[in-house]
Image (cartoon, helix red, strand yellow):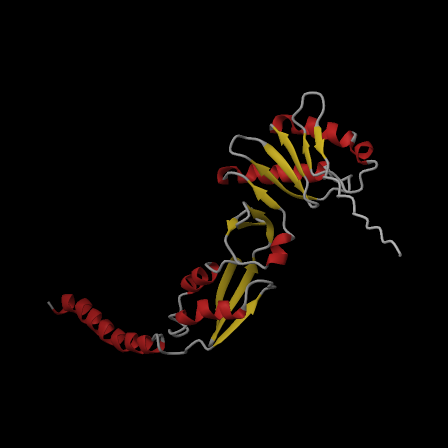
Length: 246
């Protein structure tokens, strides 16, 4: 009887010894202990501001160093419109470290949203001058990758000309067009014929532009054996006034 009681007694002793240890650890790791008082940020920013980062992080710093939830911090910072990715770490005894990568805009999408260099569409405020410097790509949302690919192909095709491409567009009916930086529009039509039509247009482009300093305003490449070009309206002739001396 005595021998069988010993294991139970040892278990009771171990449990009683563990209670003070648990109590000490609970006090050590308590949410109010070791508050996080410092924030360091690594990254190069043009659009992300420190005020935005502080605003996302501060509501989550009310807990102590050990209770701070890094996943919650990362989610809050990642929700900022210009943040591409974020990594949060703690550094003993009171510091939260953030490594933030800012989104790099590649183009505008349908005139309202932006496309990052990683191919993600996002909403973010942007200065008018910065927005104007980006190409404007237009098309159905489910064909974004195709529109981006077409834009890259068109830029290569026009690389040997003085025409700067400011955007491309795809209609719901599948017709492609190109916009130039000087405001001209080039309608291409079906993409399967785009390569042939662009080569035909660009082959005669230097001769076509001879004597036309202002450039064209519209070109339709959808013809079987050629294309149509519209030139800007000629400026009205200045009126002359004759002054007679009496």
